[in-house]
Image (cartoon, rainbow, N blue to C red; front, side, top):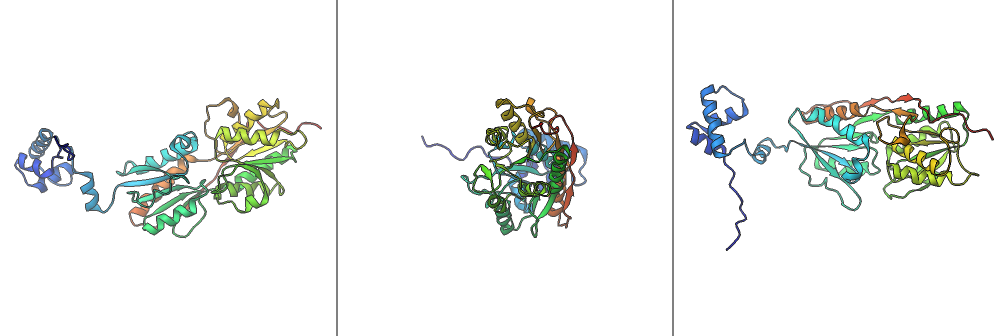
Amino acid sequence: MPVDHTGPVRPTLAAVARRAGVSSSTASLAFNDSGPVAQETRDRILAAARELGYDGPDPRARSLRRGRSGIIGVVLEESLRDAFRDPMNVVMLDGIADVTGPSGNSLLLLTETAASGSSLVEAPVDAVVLFGCSPSVDSKVEIVQRRGIPVVAIEGRPLPGVLDVGLDNREATRALAEHLRGLGHTRVALVTLELDRDRRRGILTPSRIDSATSFTALQRVRGAEEVYPDIGGYATLGSTIDEGRIAGRALLADPATRPTAVIAQSDLLAAGVIRAAGELGLDVPGDLSVVGFDGVRIDDPAAAGLTTMVQPALDKGRAAGRGVLELLAGGSPSSVSFTSAFRRGSTTAPPPAV
């Protein structure tokens, strides 16, 4: 017997109208609550819909009529599993959804990795939000702009035609470095976020810094350099505790070259450095001071009491959501920038006496 691939036939608004004895336009007004329909007629239409199993207009047809999908794409550089391990991503997504959800839009999470290629070329989205910590934001912007749809970048490099939701990454990192200098530290190292598209972890060199494509990571490096011009360190593959631990082991293994303080570009990386220090028998902050960046809650003992910069992640997400909606409405919103706040914890102290 041949297999029927057609599936069940979706009941139509016209069928509901026939069952209720009204015109299709009257049935449409009843469902959309967009015009004067007597309550008795509305009840009859809704009863007919229940009998036929009709739960509203076909969203595909509605999208064709409006010329929009009602979907906003949010681009994440890593797999969803890795993306949701970072509390920063979750909080910013919450902020975007807080604003776009009540307006009737849905979020589509797009995982853009080197292996997967770009799904932005054909994704059925009306607008795109990019997370600027990615080292390949610029190329994503080019794809979206070729499609002619609005794009918002959270902490992206300022680019023509892109609405930027910025953060004081350079100034905030300089404040962390000044805190360490004020404590007397002269041997300080950086543990950075992913720097470039090549996905290489390793020792931080001037050439690697100069070729960095991640705007956020580069700005945080430049802030540290304003206080420690010759600062070195280690570049990771992203904001995870495991990456911070790998970097910490590399930087702290040799007592002859070991720094007395580490500036980690995220709280997750900082927690990993603290884990590595403990594995090597080092006390934090007695032997090593560690600072992070983000100020979000991390359920890991290594992150307890961390000295860090607290950034308004939820507000950044909401600003991105408001910007997207204004762009979709044909407006011209202005880029915005947010300020981080220093929070001193228990992971910094003067350097150990020699």
